View 1 (cartoon, chains in turn red, purple):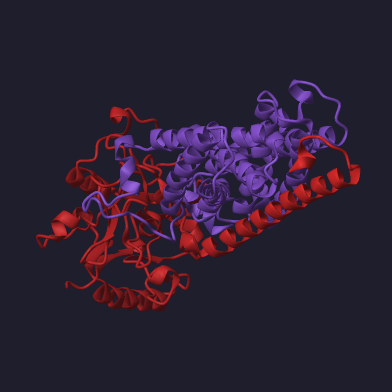
View 2: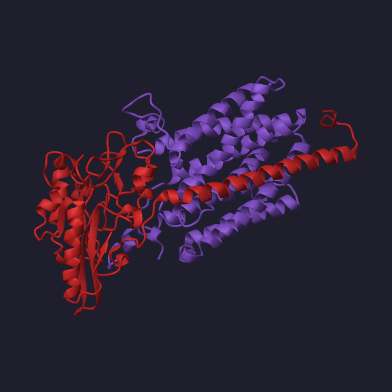
Length: 271
Length: 296
């Protein structure tokens, strides 16, 4: 069994070139949206805007400006987190979503029927429909390339090594070393996101080095599995069903009592 | 900010809203019919209501299945929810995934409803087997009416995953809309005044239960209350609570008879439909792109 593989993304050295986005689209043969006629976002230099079924990589531009000369850019190449405990895999009713031998999460497009439960289940908003295929799609961590010993296209194309690919254990060591280095340089806000195997979702096989709160990067602070609500929600529904059933029975009994009270004939009282 | 605000909408729109609405009516009306068959002491005067309930359950299950299938990105693969496509005929079932066990529940509910409807059309006293099928179908019916809310809760989307009360709310709404549909249709099928009065009384009670659960549901969403400062908040208040619960409750308590806005059953159905519209679209309107970048 091969060891768990994944991405470590050091956002501090991302230059926003979007080479990873292009490489991903190129390798996975993802078509342009609306035949390439795409409106500009109008409020950002980033026109991809989000991950979806046609964009499995997205370089987020976080543009924090108070005025033209006061602010900073944060850039982060976002992708499926290949969660160790994956919400999408948990809810998928067709078995289309599988965990591979590399501990990554892959949607089998020939099994998916496009019910979209995985889209609502993903705590990161990663998955969406590919309109051409009619199925839900996302990053496969280039499963086809990994099977022949190649690194994913995005990591291969990244010119600054912001996206690093390798065995998760090794990536964690590398990330921790970089974190210490950044803190020593005075970047007190530096932190790792998703590296902890005892943290949310059992850790992420695509984890990040950030220099601000996760929310600033559009990441949830405490991502959760969708099944957390099942027991409580099911119990409340069952309880309300029991109350309604009881009300109906009480109503029927009252009707019977009224009939007896009336002491009248009619078809009902004969039964 | 709730972590649910960082997720993407599954684009469940009108077909799913209709499915939630029709499934609720089908499950609720069948449940009431089964209850009448089991505990109504076999009164002949109840038979038009029972027959209508089974018919609504049967046709509702058929329409629900069709709506769900049409909503899929690949409709011809609908059977992948029931069988493992690569290992047919091995069953596909996940007890922890509402969409998975819900697909089975609709199938089994539809089967029970078909049997009950067929048996009831034979115009004879129900056999023990028929009563057992009705009992099982009644449980499946209520399950179908309520699991859709649980399904929404078992996601990571705003509103849906932020409250554990949606299953209970949809179930109560399924009961009230089921009773309302029975009131509308069974009258034309010769239901007695006594049956109608019981249905009206039960509908009023379910509306009160629904209102209480709705209040608890909204209170449980207090941390993300800003989501209601929108058209959907207005529709919830005016359409669901006002027109769909309080107004028909008043009409039930002071019956004056009438059509359109003065018909409580019609208003309950309208309220049940709007409830699903609000719950689906209020969440769908919150998209990940609004928080994904500093510019958003």
